[in-house]
Image (cartoon, rainbow, N blue to C red; front, side, top):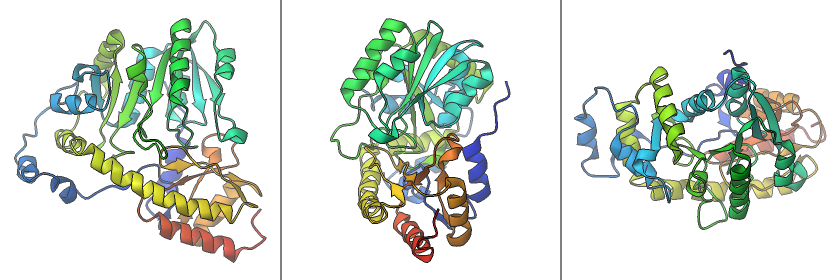
Amino acid sequence: MKPDPFRLERYFSKYEFSAPYLLCCSDCESMALRDLLALEPEAHEKFLSMWLGYTESLGDPALRQAIGGLYEHIAAQQVLVHTGAEEAIFNFMNVALRPGDHIIVHAPYYQSLGEVAHAIGAEVITWQGNPECAWEIDLDDLKGKLTARTKVVVVNFPHNPTGFMPTPEFNHELSAISERHGFIVFSDEVYRGLEIDRCDPLPAFADINERAVSLGVMSKTYGLAGLRIGWIATRNEKLFNDLAAFKDYTTICNSAPSEFLAILALRHAGAIAGRNLQIIRDNLSRLDQFFASHADLFEWHRPKGGSVSFPILLRGAVDGFCADLVEKSGVLLLPGTLFGSEFNAFRIGFGRKNMPEALRRFQEYIEMKPGSIG
């Protein structure tokens, strides 16, 4: 297989470590190693004395236990730890699909959720969110796309890049449709726990459907992208075993220091996620004011979850707009064309503490070019 270049990652490689104001990042506020170790009195010494041999291929048992605790009906033995979410996506697609199979992907989407399947030889169909309805997706639309060859339906809640999130009833109905038609739901839940206006997280798909797969990672909700720890949770025993065997050809096992730190972080998951959720809520209040004052330039749908959203540019082409913005002001936004040529929108991220400064620079850029945008 030979997948097409990852457009988003190629764009980031050009700007991420040179642009001074990143206003498009998908992850939440991270933390220094010393601050993570300071969460428990003996953690520093345990970290320094840990053994740096091979780890268990399925993941450290204590880590699998901690991850299982994030779910209602997932046991430790139903968790398979990967090196980030990307490896988990790659492995799942290679195990679940064959050339000629049919897969439906919630769009716009993170490119690997569809591109890996396409490179395998599967037919990839998009299930498009409606921008006129705050990027909502429709189950009747999905039903019209299903065929006898549909093996997988991919969803992403809370959604990257739009921030859309359905009701629990939506997920239960989707689960019932999957049972009737026999496809697997692959549920990208890397932002689970960042539901902005809800008291409780959206139920994980692996909890409500025995054949489904839930994807998780330490990078987004917990802001610990540098650990490179992701996972798949599923009660689908055959699929789990096939995934575990396939992983022998990718990373085999994970980084011992990363697993130790992930276990430590998950013992404090509520506090870390709560801190990041408060950052998100504070930043969203600023974005609400910003977009309200520029309604002639942007169409803003307030996200329901996660740390990103997808405002629509009402005047001009988004590629030129984002290129001029980063060149003139050092503010990086992700043009929506990286998710598909039809999206004259941009991804904005609000999970980091320094977002207000980047937003101020964005405001100055608009004021510097009154009437000229577009």
